[in-house]
Length: 469
Image (cartoon, rainbow, N blue to C red; front, side):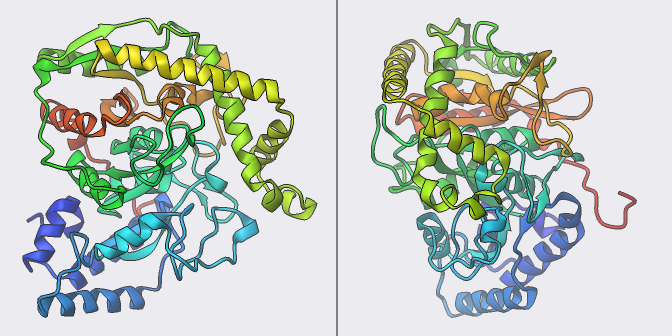
């Protein structure tokens, strides 16, 4: 066992608790001590529960285990839920001043499943207000930093979750993803983030009207991530997860979508170097042009995305006093939604249908498609979003995340895998996208990828209070 409990991966920690190599009280004390040293710098965790209450819960977990009762693989393990999900008895703000005094009444379905496995909820992970944008800041809690540089953003919207993992303040983390909210922060913190197929967690519908977002797991490695996915999925995946045989795999590398997407210099180089490592292990890498008009994907995506905001129009927009408390990007989303015509909605659905058909054809030839996990490296946490990428102006707050749309619009399983660091020590990742329902194979590729790369072994040099930062 490592000398420091927080260095144990989640599956290792689970075994150590069950085998009574370490007590739940020792685990909780180690994590709380680590959080107290580092969270004031990185701001990954918010709405933290009183430490005396947490220690009492950990003691109860030990007593229960001593009596021969084992709750599940997360027995006595600390866990923090993304601040967009409700946890009974813990503040539920969504990062908005509108809900700064709201306390959770019921557990979100995935929270209930995590609780059933024995986790102790220590608080929440930070997120942008209502999850909008890939920079985790809000007026209630401030901004979350990248684990690799506290002056840079952790990404978002699962930024607190990703930073919490990379800084060892959490063993494993949950999140959600509409436009890369599990993948981008995974890349910005050198951890694994997985967006499952649209029907894996809590959704059963597919096709052009399927929801654009879904919940999913994050891990310090793929094994930990799989363990949490098996907990929160509607049905656990059957069988054993084993690394795929790389010599059987064909990947279609989409790069920057036929030079359509602007990229920070160095991103494509890192991704291609990591793909070359896979090629040396036997993977067949095919550089392909996207057989689709990329701008049509943006048109369909933004129309459908804006339209989904109308679900909360009465709650957040109709009352002028409430609307005044919204971040400008949310107000803009509502305004755009209200201007959408029936004809525009029909066009958006038609484009999406066409895209789904295109994806089906692509996956006849390729096991996976691949894209960078972001168009920009982690940027200063002092700015809300990059207004220019690769020399091109960004016309919306989320245009710089356009690279996330192909997988999201298809409702496909997609994982962020690390590809290393640039000369300034900024991490980056690669999206590996599978066909709808191909979640297990995507994860088995990730297991094999970890065996041929060492990117996850590069740990951040953590800063703590009193160190001069």
